[in-house]
Length: 247
Ligand code: CA
Image 1 (cartoon, rainbow, N blue to C red):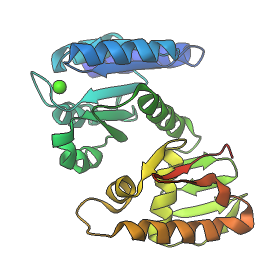
Image 2 (cartoon, rainbow, N blue to C red):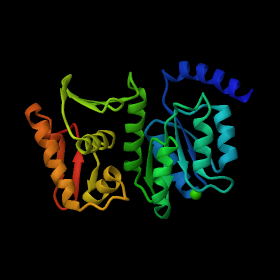
Image 3 (cartoon, rainbow, N blue to C red):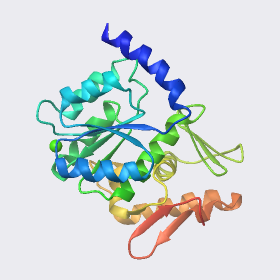
């Protein structure tokens, strides 16, 4: 009954929203974070709905279906993970991207979040700049003609088939290079340390030396060089790497 209602609402909203700004539901029990995020995203032109716990989040969703959900991991009445699992089972919300907000101690659980259908996660404390970059990346992914495709400049990744293309020409690369490029293309214009890249791309259960990152960066650049895309992977001296279409 509620699902039908939500679905109907969704189709009406989809028509209206294609002409207006994106609606983001922020589920977070910490007032100060809610205030900061809400203000910053409002400045960016997003429409923000706020919820301080799971039940008010459900109410907000019934009133206005969001284009994206920012979901805190620990909430007073339920866990963000539980909400995420529940929502991903609903037809109306299945395709709605979710970014989890996690505290550092909960970070090792992030893999669970991604397995349950979260599109990304961001660790507290985060900067507004970092958050808006993630939101943009996730929304961009969601609005592509094929949701399994990431396109930046001349580079296209087919995530389902694990194929990379530059100017529609297929490039052969190893699985690690592919994952690295995928991470970069979904997290553009932000610097990541070698350690962060190890965490995000290799996973924290792997023991790999930081130098390994450099080895794979070199390989990836080598593959992209003949296609003039190698300069998109930028070295930030003393810190790490950044992927940017702006060179
Ligand atoms: Ca919390």
